[in-house]
Amino acid sequence: MFKKLYSVFWAKDCDMIEINPLVVTKEGVVMAADSKVIIDSNALYRQKELAAQEDKTQDNPKEAHAK
Image (cartoon, rainbow, N blue to C red):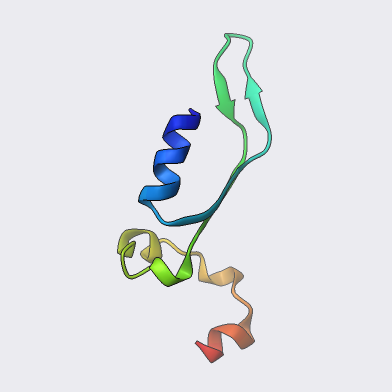
């Protein structure tokens, strides 16, 4: 899991990948129960697919207007 996270971090120009909590199920499967991924906004021109998925409803209206 950590090797894949590292690979995604670099391939997708991430600023941060946070997993909290990381759990082990009764079956012994390691699973990310919740996560947060932040992409470097300066790299969005390289990450067009991710930029299209951005949830703009969470943007500060003043900051959105400034953009």
